[in-house]
Length: 451
Image (cartoon, rainbow, N blue to C red; front, side, top):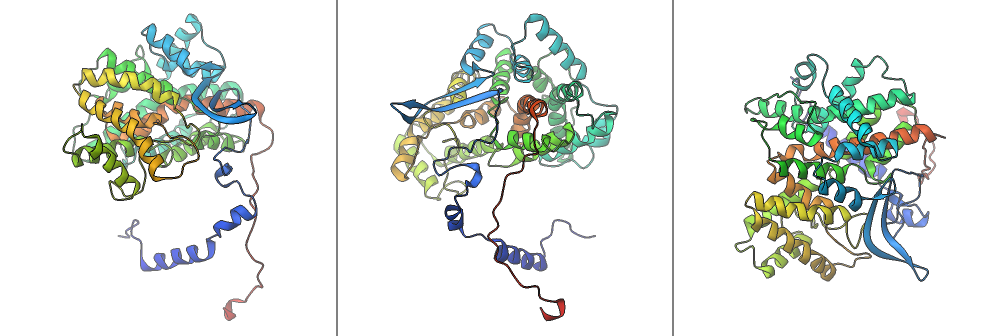
């Protein structure tokens, strides 16, 4: 039988041809003033569109000059802190409320929220035998692949899959927000069963929130504490949306502009989020801390922590990539508001779980890492902890397997993707098609027998 995963010497040779004939001189990007990564030399994103869904603020004008400021995040004009504070103060689950706000542009009243929750509960079910025929067949160790395949397969169960009228797309998006937790958890259960673990397939409960259903579906006994469910809900809220320029959301805009269907659009967004530069950062943070804990004999020794962090930057520790994962962000410099919000809840959960020493280690690294980075490297903007710094720790304390970290990101971001898809459809002009400048030299054609 042919080994589809084998890289043969012939393929190595072809790869060498790719490298030889497709490598562009890095100086050409400067010569032609190309905004590589759609960002300028200072890291500022090139303005490619307009949105009313969310806003990220990392700099403010002071005396005619842009200077870094404490990070701010707005959902539909509302500061994220105000939204979260009200949710926490009233001890309610907020993800569904935030999804409504992002998609429909206004905060729901009590009746609207109740109706939306009822709709989500109604849609939170999969077609007959879908788990057996789709999820359980060929389970992948990467849940994101299974998620994308499952979303694409859902199109086959939708008689109006290609209908891009607004009411139909709203229906599809609400459906996908409802079933994404099922697809994620069932994908993990199928993979876990393939690896020899017991198989648990719990039915969702329509009266529960998204966060509660995730814990119900995932855990063998379906049990969870109120604090656990509320902190997972907070994570879903904080990850639900983050501007139109992040890679997966921009992908949503690009693919929507082609006029394609919702399922293809979301599958493309999932493919983007799967990339370790985008959705997998909290996994790297968790793995880095595990290596750190194994390496340090005394978690209180700040000099040892500082040496370990320097070792990371010098490519001597962990994965030798030269990075301190969870520190720094493409946009934020002084602070990431999501990390600031999550920090307090992380401390509460660590106390409930008896892991306060681990939380103290995270706090020390958060304080020391920027000093180490500033002493070792020339940086053009401040460095602070981002939301991924703490979210992986939260998931580990909740007993969520690492394979589900990025899928949970997708469960949450489905709300933001839906809002941006709808916005693109409403305001759609031309297909998104940026320019690429060719730097290939002209060549004379050589007949086959003369090559």
